[in-house]
Structure formats: C-alpha cells, structure tokens
Image (tube, rainbow, N blue to C red; front, side, top):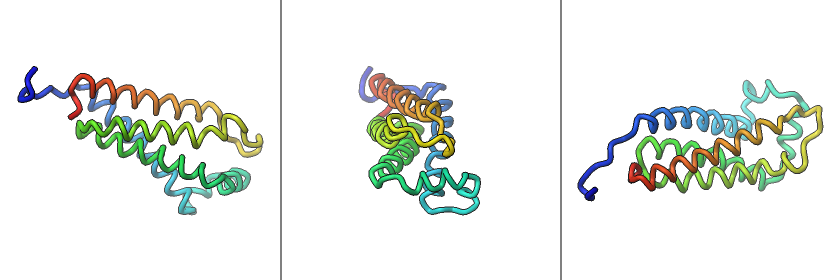
Length: 143
C-alpha cells in the first residue's frame, strides 16, 4: 500500500468510537461534577460516600482526572482517526490504574458502598481501548 492510498475506515471504528466516547464522556462528567461539588450530582451519593471521595489524596484526584479526560480525548481522537488516540488511551489506562489502586488494595468501608467490580471493569475497558487503538494504528487506520 502506498502513502497516497487511503485506508478505509472500518465500520467497527465508528461503533467502538461512539460507545467509547459515551462511556468516557460519562466518566469525565462524573469527575467534573464531583470535583466541582455539583449539588444535583453529588446529592445522589450517601454522606459516607461523599466523605470518602472528598478525603481522597491529591494524587488520586490527579489519576482520576487523567483517566477520565484521557479516555474522553482518546475517544474523540479515535473518531478522528488520529494516532494520538493511542497515547491518550495509554494515559487514561495509567490514570485509571493509579486512581483505582487505592480502592483495590485498601477497599473503602462497607458503608461507603464502593464496588471493586466496577473498579476492575473501568481498568479492563481502558486496557481494551488502548489495545484497540494500538491495533488500528498498526494497521494504518489511524494517521
């Protein structure tokens, strides 16, 4: 294949890209609304959950921000077929692992109601999106 030949966009890029944008968009909204203490959003959390979240160390908040916004930006870049999506998803995975390490290795008290299953799902999805973007980049779909 020559450089002048364009690689056709596979149908699954649109499916994965839109679903990833929705998933990561929700994560970015959740982070931003929680960080800004948006009352309609945080009022759904129990007082124990709010206390736990707002007592998290600063490094946890940084990881959470990188994880959610990296995933959102990666999804937008994926839809634009930009190979920088790989790097954004790599940052997202690092942020997801970093921010969720505390939950995995030092689980919050039961009254907080945090789910370790959701934590694992978040990390797995971030890893799968990184692998997918890397695969598309290797195939020449991302430029």
